Amino acid sequence: MAGRAAGAGAIAFSAALPVMAGLAVALLGRPAAAAAAGEAPAVAAGAGVSTGGGLDDEASPDAGGRWHNSILQLDQSMTTQTVHVGDDYQSANPTYELWLAVKPRYYLFETPVHSLNINLWANLFLELTNSDTTTRERQITFGPTYLTAPYSRVLIDRSTAQTTVTAGPRLTLPTDNGVWSSGQLIGAGAVAELAQTLPLRGRRAAFLRTARLAASAIYTHSFTRATSAYDPDLYVLRQDVAGRPLVSHILRGGAMVHDAVSLTAAASVAVTRRLEVSASYTLLDTWIYGASDDCVVTRTNCAAPSSVADPTTFGVKTWLVFAASYRALAELSIDAGYYNLANQLGSDGQRRNPLWSPAARFYLTLTAHLDPLVRRLTARRH
Image (cartoon, rainbow, N blue to C red):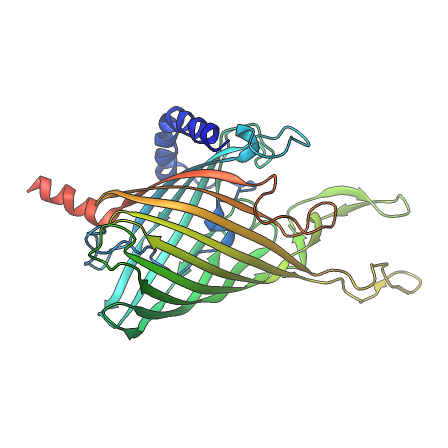
């Protein structure tokens, strides 16, 4: 099955190159639209703090300069069932999606011991199949934007191992299509990570050089206009329980998320100077607003609305990722992998297997490292 998936992915990638180019042009020239956006894996989990990788400076020549580690990513992913890997369809809903991420990073200062940078993460999506993630066919949608200012400090630095702690504030800007109109104003929180680099055969070895273990957490509090998705400019004719018509401004059922925490454990191995393999597992915990106990004033009395006793206001998603990253050039990395991002509980109320769900995907990502790319282009001009 893995061979079939890899072959299908290569064919799809070749066919998608012209569309990818169009997507890049669209990012520069298209104004903001308003619709529901899809979620690429890292976006759903939230912007992390790591610059990535056990690949050393010899394989990552973009070290140096205030803009190093600034990248542009072009990702394509498809659900495993699209290429007939996994259980049979409950309903035919193949999904193949392109994702463009712009991640500039500016270092305010950087020394061998500590550093402080400001980084931005903006996202754009294009769903190419007739899936249910967008309103219109091949609709370009915007994702969330993250602004983070992490401070990183080396706690222990030996010739063979290094311990680093990173922490800083984080803002989530509601640039997702439809999120602002649903009442989300901004998200504010913090990120933190503890990372340990370990020697295997050493950085000078040709094979199995180093390993990296990391544990990270991201907290976000969302500021919203209301406890439910509410748009004052929306007028929808509905009816109450007695069948009387009324005008509603509620976009959808369910309450808004007010707090979210993601907890991640990750490990990576620098197999060679240019090749790295990694795995990570994330718990995405969310808390939504509960129903109010306030009564509704009527002409005759104050009526208490009916509600569910002890309603569930806590939810969990799990996100499992396996990846391989190859630094093909100073300016280009190629990543391929598999991820499963899904609700921890399935539709039957039972805990899902974290390894697979109908939402599981294969992905292939091209990462342009902007600092060495700019230096190369500048050198050619001179």
